[in-house]
Amino acid sequence: MQDFFTPNGFTLAERTDAHSAAPGQIFFLTEKFLKQYYPLSKLPPEKYDEVANFATKLQNDSEARTLMWHLYTAYCLKNQYAFPEILEPFGIEESGKVYLLLLFALIPFYEERAVREGFPIRYARDAADRIGSTTVFYAQKYNGRLGILAKSLPFLLNFKNRPCFRIGRFDFEMNPFCDALPEIYACGDKITALCLDGWMFDTRGERTVDESQAIQKTRLIRNNGSITGTPIDMNNGYAEQDEVTLDLNKWQKIAGEGDWTIHYHIPGGGGMTPEACSEAFTQAVEFFAAYFPDKPVKIIWSNSWFFNPVYKAYMPESNIAKLSRSGYLFPVASSGKDGLFFVFGRDDDDFDTYECKTSLQKALMRCQREHGFLRRTGWFMPIK
Figure 1 (cartoon, one colour):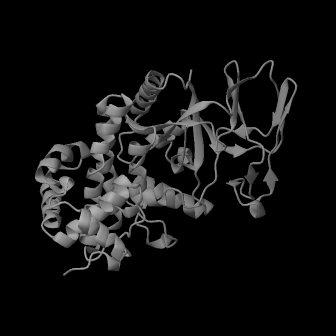
Figure 2 (spheres, rainbow, N blue to C red):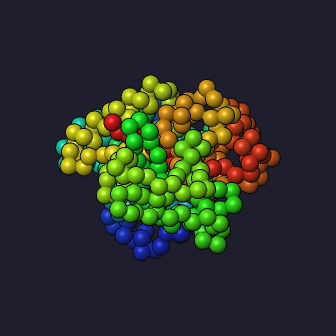
Figure 3 (cartoon, helix red, strand yellow):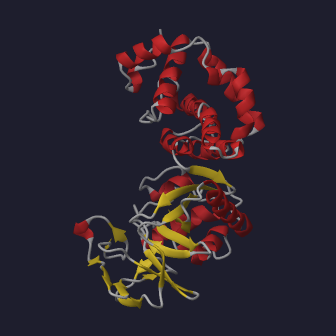
């Protein structure tokens, strides 16, 4: 009898529990289920037979079925996702398809949430198409094979557990103002942003959370009728050196502590034209105003390797550059490798072996050569 548990780090107790609870037919491995939900994933129709045949293989093997029930219980019901990237005995050929089927099991939870919270079910079904776009990372890493990386599993739980929605080109989530954001002020058409009190910057001018690396620490001082702090160069997202004082009789705070914001995440998949981005932002503002009227939002924001300002120079006519220029940039902490995994499917330091086929891949490697640091930057847009 094949052991699907011990080689993958699961315990005998977990196997016993799953064996006693697993049904004779697991719902998300059935032909009926896959025919209903496969089209929502936006996976290629020609891949359906490969997925369905693998599901049948798992369904017909009692030990494999037990493992699938354990993974389903842990992931979909208990929100656990610390699973091995390569499962034994599936190997790289089939491990990704195990996790792909697990994501299909999430779709009914998306739909149930829509009904429970009273928003149109189309938003739940739009979230399901993230399954198809997420397979790109497995394909990048494993020579075009179909599947999902284990490290991709956590994000898809957001559409089940958090106020996260797929709206147009982006994933949007409502969040309270947090210390990742600067305070933002307006004076007529002028916008400025101030670093929060205690932000730290290293010798590169990059924001850091490691005090031992910090050479600059910002202050935010509130006085009667004024505020003094470190402004941000919002074209490149770096903190400036000298503090400024804003007269609050002239400058109005747009976003700060106590305000609500919309954060967006940028899925892969192309099609990120200025028109598509603008439409997504408009729809998101309208959606949150309609379904969360007690939480008026002040800004839309994100933080991503997309907004590294060097890409505006390297690829000035690209959709990435156009999106970056449509808002204001601010500093966030970076790993120094931001973007590698999303563009190459890997993030090791063996840069000489990275194969650059696309203009985006070439831009990242150029940045690595010229700067030695792949940067993440914040972006915001006030809501008018």
